[in-house]
Length: 77
Image (cartoon, rainbow, N blue to C red; front, top):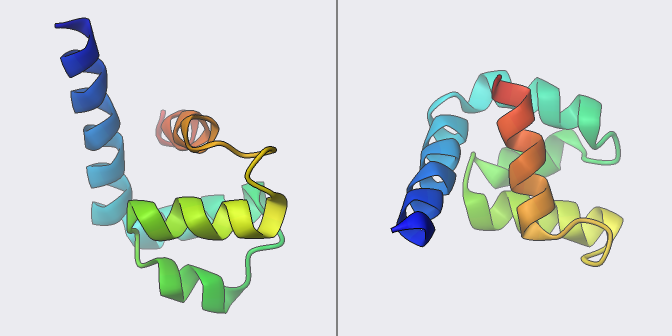
């Protein structure tokens, strides 16, 4: 049950990011300043694109998916 609850919370985070994409773009740009406006347009609030682009710019070992999710969760609180 714990695994399912965690998965539901993670999905909720990504739903909020996608639903409030215009608000999150500014926060992403502040946190990850190497992201360009073109990067943000390409992301469109989609989980795979956000994670992939951050990992592309900063390195997959520096920013794992779980780390990115934690940062996004902190941005919305």
